[in-house]
Length: 124
Image (tube, rainbow, N blue to C red; front, side, top):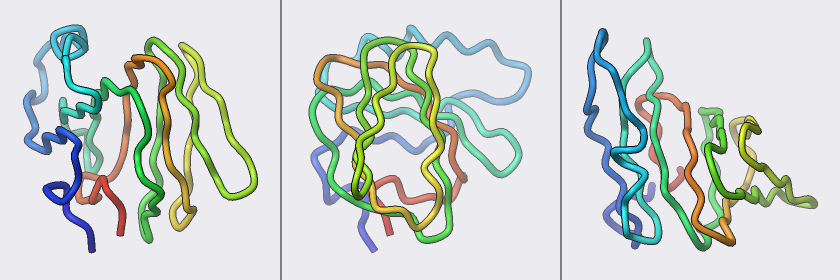
């Protein structure tokens, strides 16, 4: 199993906000590293993360967890075996569990992700 510390991404799994707190995504969207993720809050058994990304993530899959991606600004490409999905602002997409995929952002892109709180972001 891969661990986030084995990859060159700034992935923060700590939950910053609880229920009844206002969350300003722009606070985190100013990150200056090429691949930054911060867990914003937990909703039931899922977490909501903000990502500020540019470049490529590695190919991976999640054996038991779906992932939802929503583009706030920029452009996100999700490579799947046999096709690429392009998301622009206000577009969302679910990658089902057990599907090999990678995300790419040819320009600075801000995304929101919803996934199981126990997911290993770098894959199983």
